[in-house]
Length: 431
Image (cartoon, rainbow, N blue to C red; front, side):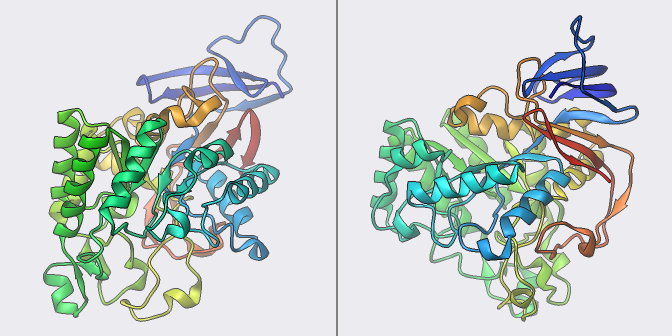
């Protein structure tokens, strides 16, 4: 379909460009920005007066519940939530049921997602079979099936010899490894170590759980030269280690969860299970360091860490509640809120959720390479059209996600998505 988006404020975070312009779309790609080509006859016109036209958001961490919950229609609801939040591409971890360790399972997930015509689903394959940490998966077969990287999700790999071999194999074929830094023996608590956890009687997760794991990972990167993506950094000390690794020239990238960027352990209050998250919420100094790291580019991307959790799994004492929160529909509004607080331009803020994560994905994107998270002629027409001044309040009952548990309930946000386009197709339109 030929579409003309008129009178919008067009922002390309990859270049910092911010200008009033029209955007012409044809054959699923951006044809022009500015004056439409002579003879261009759009089949649909979108009036974006007063609205921002930006690349679709790229979320590097969003669980979808499939394989494993097909009977509940969880994939359909979560992809609908993504589109309503302006997310056009999302990376899903391999800790599904069954685990994404076979090409057939990856094919099934991708084909179901394509039939639903929602956001693009970019799966991570399991690094080890069943995430058990014993034997490696067939990474090349999984890559051919569509995996963009390999991960252990929330299951730490205890055997460093297996970890080294997995990195060596991945490096040989130019594949990337995505790991959350958590020592398996030190990271067994439910809240960040500190005065609040002690006062509440909650088992603590010390910062050293993250830093010990990071030291190990970076030593192995030095040996193997594998491309490593550090998932959901949570501490000031962790940010400093990532900065040093990048300064050394190691092939390392990093992301942070919107939860850790905006909240601290003080928000746990009186055992509020909505704040039961992984990684745990840490102290203000950690939050400040995460914010500075994202602003300075030490942290490459901001993620929703969307994790659907059933009601009965949250309606438990804090230490027993399942960690996780919904986030796909909130990522844009929360990112804009953070950007305003930090005095960033809208282009700088949007880079954290579009061009930044697009660069992390890099060559793993295949045909999407060079256009994910970008808005320029020739790029895929994955776009988000939103009203930057439209205020709204986070009401769980109004969310499209099947899981409506969020630590941001009642928060006032700006930026309301009006249209989301995926491959030049209008996938979401506010009613």
